Length: 529
Image 1 (cartoon, rainbow, N blue to C red):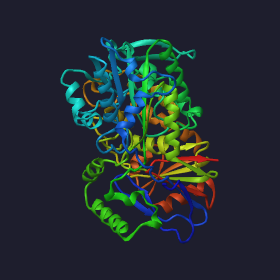
Image 2: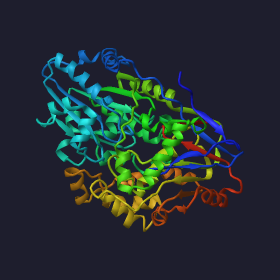
Image 3: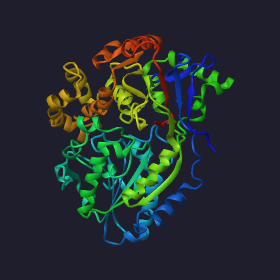
Image 4: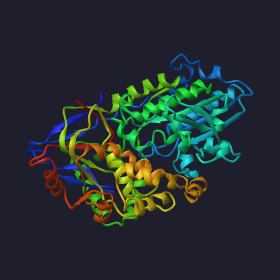
């Protein structure tokens, strides 16, 4: 059995703790007697035969749904939607879960005589995937069977002819989704539940929707009332998606949901030390750490970025469920919790988050300063259930180089957001009120989103809102080792070292603060009581 998550109380014998720092890492010694390190559970064993498990799930669905084969017949319109490049992180070694599931669904469809089949990558407002990225996600056989004939689509949230209005929730939330998906006799959605935020009604109501719909839950108020994104029953983001899901179901749109889970085996064997607890490092682990850090320090940032972006994770399928949306999601989230939950007692004055090279929105790209904020305060801060690991009024310390650097093809509106919006204000409420509509409706950003590989013009706003709950909760944010002018543009304080950052934090929370270090990745959820 894998070992569960663990909270280490730091004492004088505790070795320095590995802390991520973008495309690199540091060893940091934490103050004894008032620091703790939260470690993820070890990876669960993968399914022995994942392909058979997928076939079994399709034949034995959840929630009273008929088996997939009974829902298919000649002459029907079948649409298969699937998650985009934003997960899993890092991208998994082939075959990807999406490939396994889509191939199995297509086998059942072929046996049932279904000829009208279209695949849709559920982008929402994310960038379009490249051919290589699509091939990695769904496999060469599926890509070659569908892409040349135009049957592999990428959802376009700005295509007026490709969207259809379904209705509104009792709260007045517009529900507008992909027309092909809505008008199909059956919509199969293929999901990877990397974290507890994924899946459920969010798959269709977000992944296949438009700005007209997304604005109802990707806004400052919703984010401030989501405590946290990893706890659906206390997340207004999910409450809105669930209301939209009911509108979709009541409109007669049939969704056959398929959700898969992964273990948290994040790094290949050559980098195994990244998943170990530091006091258990062997001589080989220490030598590997020293060799890697020396090589990285001698290489330019673009080379290091290329090295880290090439990592393919060995995480593997641990479960698969199919059928009615909510019944499937309940099973998948229970499995996510079994892999990721760590029991944590109480909160501390300070939380330390080492930010890795990767977040959902810079795969094969650059972690720009806005994504640094989103990753630290939107994602890592929200890896909790119950309460954040840091108390209200406490301080978050992030570790990341935070370069003033952007990918112009992927993040064009981010550049203008950083230069124009953040130079005016960092207040999410003021940003939303003053600037969002102009960026969201800008024709140039819309053109780049629809024809290139750019995130939608409004996307940097959503990334800023993603951290709104943390900004409301915290008394200060400090970034260690970040480019000072980038950090200050974000509205945060730069520090050269962790010791300097802890001294600065003391000015906010008082002397000798208590400290939590979230040792992530691998992914975990702190279950704080």
